[in-house]
Length: 62
Image (cartoon, rainbow, N blue to C red; front, side, top):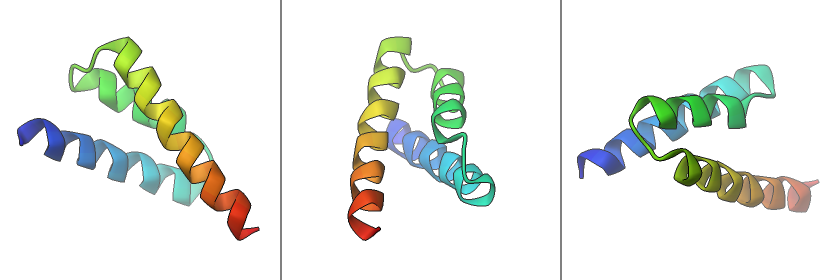
């Protein structure tokens, strides 16, 4: 449960940076995932999967 809350907070923080600057979601979320102790390969896969979903929705809305 603790890990899930940390992952949600990482996503929230990265999305706040991305929403305010319009960029840096991948950099921010990868850095924060590594900071909480996530395996580098898992952090990369998680970020890329999230970016696929957000890009799909963004493309569909435009």
